[in-house]
Image (cartoon, rainbow, N blue to C red; front, side, top):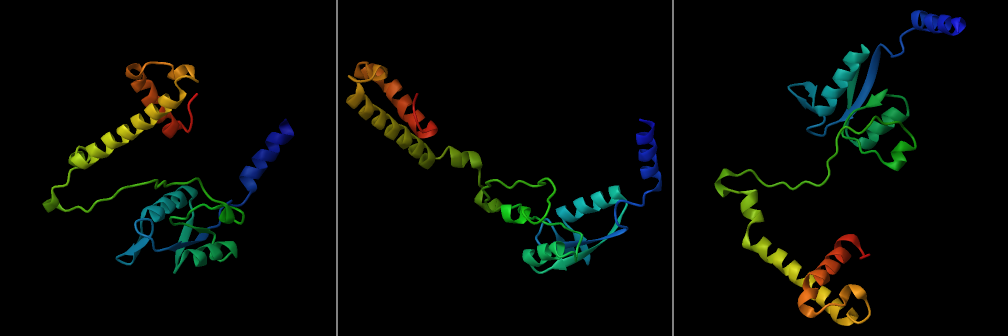
Length: 185
């Protein structure tokens, strides 16, 4: 135990810095992640890297590339120590280089133009006649398919063994589950 602690103490006290004094960082121009404003590198990824470099106590220089492939190639062949931008993590890229944890998840977004003259309201859109008719149409189709199933299976399956007036909701529920879950248990 004492030998282990002595070795650990020596390793901490007498080892050189674990991080290079100045790192070369590659990036591409992709607002808002990385861009140049007033001859200064700015953007979400750049600011995040600046915070990491400050915590590491290291300096860095940023080299801009024209496209992603040049930026990633610079890291792969050792011209740059790292790359910062909105880099997608793909299986092919992961096979040749390491990535940090993802810092941005885009998902599916809907965007509309910001125009005060249009007086756009998401609630007005959701509560519009077009949406109401589409939802009612979908319910009608589900009910029709469910009742068709009831018609063909009422003598064969216990679930559908009801008179027509009592079968509306179970038939609708069966069709809804078929669409949403891909089956009905």
